[in-house]
Amino acid sequence: MKEELLTMSDGVILDSYFMEPPGTPRGHIHLVHGMAEHIGRYEEVMNDLSHAGYVVTGFNQRGHGQRSLDQNQLGDFGEGVTFDRLVEDVREVMDAFKIEHPNLPRILFGHSMGSFVVRRFSQKYGAEIDALICSGTAGKPGLTRVGGSLLASILSIKDGPHAPSVVLDTLGFGGYNKTISHPKTKFDWLSTDRQIVHNYIEDPLCGTVSTNSFFHVLFDGLKVISTTSNYESVPKKLPILLFAGTEDPVGNMGSGIFEAAEIYRDAGVENATVYLFEGVRHESLQGPSREPVLNMMKQWVANL
Image (tube, rainbow, N blue to C red; front, side, top):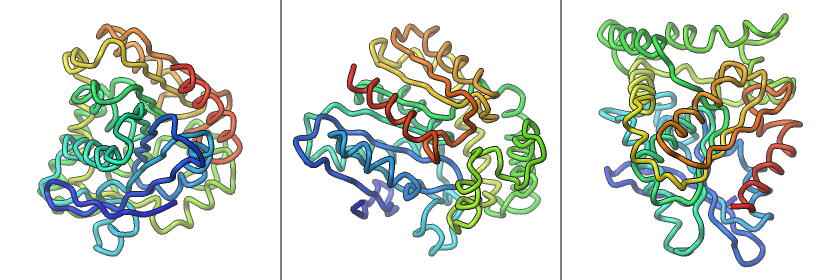
């Protein structure tokens, strides 16, 4: 996995990573990671996809990765950052790698929080990609988003916007273990694989308690992507793949991805495909479920 530093249009430097296939590339797959993790966790995924013939790229989103840790900004997007700025980052990083391979089909992938970012991308720039893949996404947030956004505003005034928000972290993720009998850690909801959970806990770049402003930006983003009218601009022919585990609490144990697919279909999108993986929790691309999930992804992309 090779690293390249890229300067965004607002001057922020993001660390991006890429892998080239051994032969002539058949497409470009761009990965957008989730909240409180980093793109380095996807190195094996990137390696598998590159050996399948794809240029694979990714980057650490603002507030994530070693650069953010070094700058004491881990878990915080930064001053004045909006959810749409995160979308612009995706577009600018993808375009930077497009220079060398301008004619390759482009597949955009997002996991968890990254899935919300790429869903917004499909609303704004759907015509610039050839397919969209969402992992561990959710349906409409409903009143949870409204209450979370209000609380984030109150806590930002009380404690400061860039203060870590233990309250919102607990409210947002504390309930995810409720579906698990006798959980041993607060992150058991991520995977049934004990090693995956252990590695996540031991990783200094994972599990960060994000700031009040981070949560505010995220809740604002959930409002935007759940607004029905925003889906009208998604290209009707854009192929969309949504997948999750049946034990993923983020997507309400699988029902959330069906709801997300229905939102696209109601907007006239003709090809929204849903896959569920039995017994898998939130991180389907980590641990023993990685191989079957990647095989499904590669087959779906090959059939585009």
